[in-house]
Structure formats: structure tokens, C-alpha cells
Length: 139
Image 1: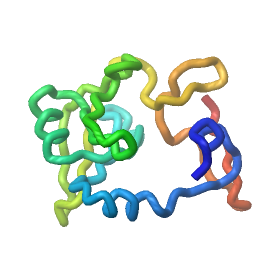
Image 2: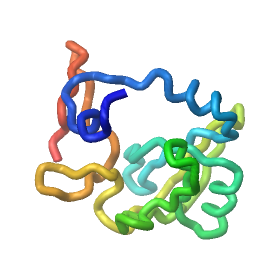
Image 3: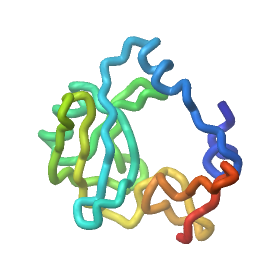
């Protein structure tokens, strides 16, 4: 897979279809969690939780994930300040994925930055064109 900066700022489509295989190969017991803004219902990011991350999220009332790349708990906003206050947890019909409805404590969410150097408000800042290229959304 491409280096992070290249991947994050590219207009070239480089989807990581091997991500779930890599997670399962390590034997990680995780669930995907879609994170949405509670007011706008905008999808902010997709992350993973293990049982401990979910337990702590509920206790601390903030989004805490399992980092599949670093193999550790990830308290969203701990270093960036872009904390997400947990308002509600939803469970799908098959009990194999979650939705966290959150309130942002600041404007940003993503670890990447826009053209002005500000944290992006969502990790979904590009769309796929008909030609399978990536187009940046207006920021």
C-alpha cells in the first residue's frame, strides 16, 4: 500500500481491499464502527472497536477505538484535541457492526489537514469520479 501522505492526498484511486484480511490474519476480535455527527448525521469516519474500546467508550462517554495499525487503544482526540463525545451507540441487526453518534468538541475529525492546514471535518473528503479518479470535495 502507498505511503500515508501519498494515499491521503492522492487523486489516484488506491483502495485497500486487503484491510479486513490483514485484521483477521492477526486474530483481532473487532467490530467496524461508523461514526456519525449526531446533529447532521454526516459520516465522519470508520474505525474498529474491540470489547475493551467499546466498554471504555461507554464509561467515558467518548469515542475510543482499537487501532488496527498500532495494535492499541486509540482515544480519539488525545493528541489532536479533536475529541468526539459519545451520545449514542447503535447496533445493527446481525450484531456485527456499530454506529457511534457523536458530538465534535472542535471543528475537525480527520488526522489529515485541508489546504489551510486545518483538521478536516470528516475522513470522507474525496469522492470517486466516473473515471475512477478522486476529486476533493469543497472544504
